[in-house]
Image 1: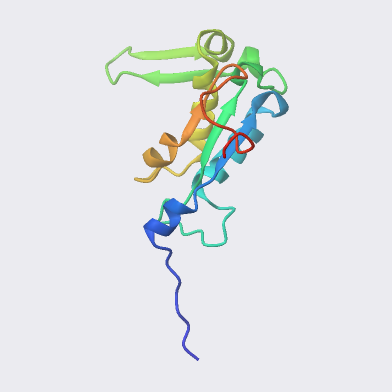
Image 2 (image 1 turned 45 degrees about the horizontal axis):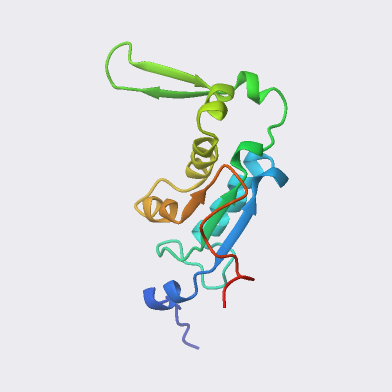
Length: 143
């Protein structure tokens, strides 16, 4: 009995994209990031293929009200290095939340995705906003 492998076509994948709206005040940061990463990858779809970008569009609102467990607000740091000697920079999570809370959510989701060529295209479909308002039509508003 022959077994055929199904590969979704790129046009069909693009037509099947849906919008998902997540409110960050209902989520802990890590749980929000895994939920958003799963939707961006498309792992919730029956035709998921790892080599094809078949994920959906994710809009996250209220990034400034995301919940953190334990002492992460005081103990977690973001590390970056310029590549030069003495070029290490550490930014506390508390300071980053005050400066730009959208970056905290963006970095959490980015680090949940696979580090491959598809990650850039998947992250373009992640839209993060600090407040309740966003410029995208909610499905109930779409006619």
